[in-house]
Picture 1 (spheres, rainbow, N blue to C red):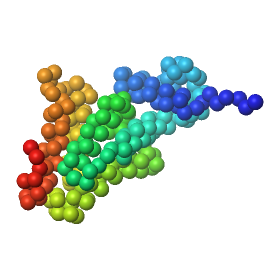
Picture 2: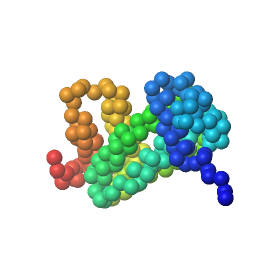
Picture 3: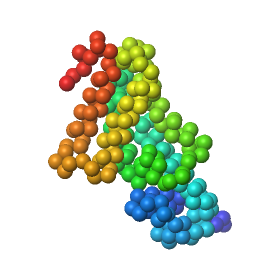
Picture 4: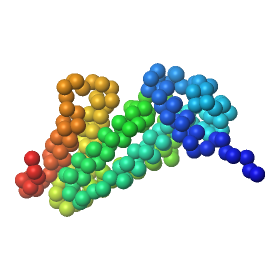
Amino acid sequence: MARPRTHDEALRLKLLDRAGELIAADGPKALSLRKLAADAGTSTTAVYSLFGSKPDLVNALYTEGFRRFGARMAGTPLTGDAVEDLVTLGRAYRTSALADPNLYGIMFTRSVPGFEPNEDAEELARETLKPLEQIIRRAIADGVFLDVPPETVAVGCWAIVHGLVSLELTGNLPEEFDVTASYEAALRANATGWLRPQNSGSIPS
């Protein structure tokens, strides 16, 4: 009978989640492979077997974050209405960040000094933004959005969602602030701001 695999996907994900927690709580210096193994109830041999070195582990965290993020973005149902679809993707962005806040910092804030993702990880990160880019390019080509470079609109959209999500995750919003309603209002105001003038009158308030 074959020996059961102990260094499996479940253990890999458990180690990644715990590694993200350690970095979020106490900074990258807290990421000791020995402590990580002990916290996960496994051996350092298992950690090395699954990831290799500490930089490889951080790269795996970055990759896993974008894998989950990309799945949520790609799985978001779209309608073909550029404004509504940008708002919907913005909601998915926030949902992903709140679901994996410890990975979010590694993905978007480079919370581990000196870390640089490898080529495959960078390609995966770029792929996650394809739904956003496709909506914007189509809206510009169809004359729905202003005739500006697509990356201008994409970066503007990202700035809105990243800024608000980051403030929420770090607890820097006022207690009385209605995050969900205000977040959506900001997304919608940003999206309608890219409409050509003849299209702006058709958008509900």
